[in-house]
Length: 90
Image (spheres, helix red, strand yellow):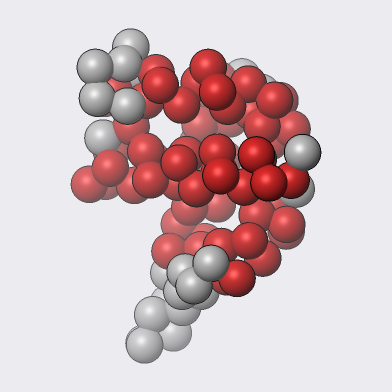
């Protein structure tokens, strides 16, 4: 599922590498989804199945808002992309 999400992000126009060659948004978002899976004690498939109930928890006002706000809202942004990916994939 990670590889499919990676390709989804690339197809959506997210950058794989910075101009200096460092990993960029695609790999950052993958890392953020790994983080959420760890917090939620689930794997990517489980997260995908529960994304409709998990995403609101990481939004402003949600019970896990502080996690969603990490790194200038990168966790929240990654979850939103994963939500879109999950809805298109299943």
